[in-house]
View 1: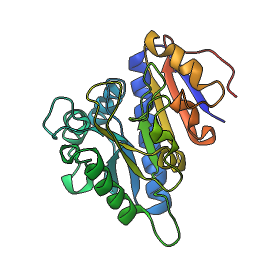
View 2: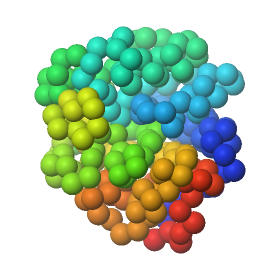
View 3: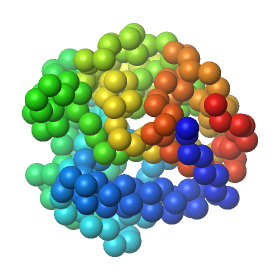
View 4: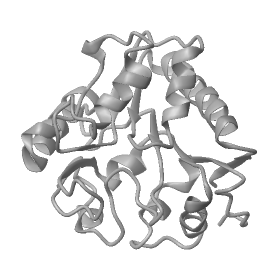
Length: 240
């Protein structure tokens, strides 16, 4: 069942999220000697990234991936990589060789193909078809989208073997993007979803209702999902 924590405000959400991330990385390193975490862009995770950069956190043996990216260069203001680099990767001095950037500048199809290859080569072994990330940090859009998986999108039907997808018709600009597949998100050992502000309340409520292609966040694996939100975004509903 989904773990739901409600905090008084966005600052408290950031502190709690940073603690959850540190703990997940520590557990992964203890179990497997390395931790694989995927970061998301958007404004919601930024305070948590800044909190992580300010407080002691052992980033040794941590590999950083991304949940999605806009099809822009890494220096573009819209780049999720640039946001993470400025708020966490740079301040925390995480070595560049342990940061796996989605190459948005290559376009959606080629960028997705290369990222899928990197995931497969690093995280798949033997008969294991899907890469298993230790933690995926997600925000949620007002319409219930996660990563760049939007309501009703064809990408939601990509199947269980799809790893990374190119998107050409995102309703939120820029329309061209790269995203981890729903299968990869569902396979992660843990997903941490953050929501702050009253504009996210309806999306959170819909996420906690019945699974629906019109609310991609509702399709995550609830038994491995932790949701942290502030009072303004709180749906205050009984979890399914």
